[in-house]
Length: 167
Image (cartoon, rainbow, N blue to C red):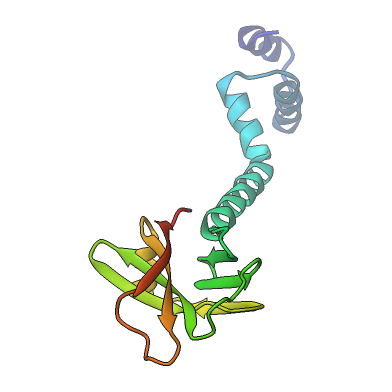
């Protein structure tokens, strides 16, 4: 039945307002009312849609914020932007010269920052400040040998490794 036929039926057999509303509700629920019906169905399931979109957004934000960089040298270097930390784990590193310490640097453009001394064994975590965080994207990772007896210099002395810090 279309709308015109239902209107004619209402004229022939008049019903009370309460009964009319119930009949129209029943008919509307049985019929697909085109765009209006789709909108009402969408409104009916908005909670499910909203929770799905929110879950997807949370998943993507965690994935994008908690990015990790791995430099497979003699260390496993992980950058966790969500915690603003770099963790370095000595994996296959064999410390040969006891007078030298391996140090981690970040370079971007002409600017060079010392992150800290690399661990000879075990794990070491470096907390990052805003200056270091800004240099990580499209920056260069440098590992150098520095004399343990001297204070750490402002630039690397003997570079062991240099590569792009990629996410």
